[in-house]
Length: 159
Image: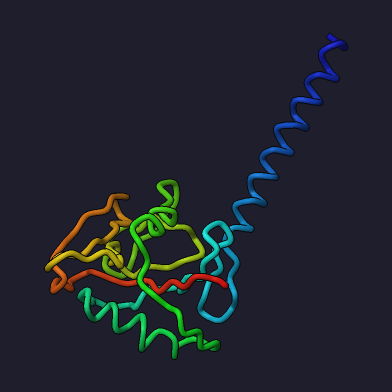
């Protein structure tokens, strides 16, 4: 039995090290800048820490990202934009979630807060635009004039 003790200790140490390394990696991906923004080191972008906090259609979302959001934070960067579907998908976390202000459970990384589950994307074609559903974890399209329960998150590329 004493022969297996060193192997057991090694295995437990290895598992503990890997778990700690994974936790550190997860924490390092999102850095709260303390000014209403969050840096995403994996995508090399900066996110708004919260959405626009109210119902908004796609065209209003474009305007909010470009003309309103930049003046709600301390630093005035001029390259804010709407995110792509692929960027939003990286924020979905099926293992986490909380009840949003609109009553739906939102499953998103803890560094970013949403007030409802549907977030507009930059993709638009004719009278429809893309959105991502943070309640169920899928993307789809809807009419650009629809506003009820839709939100927008601002994002910018880091230089």
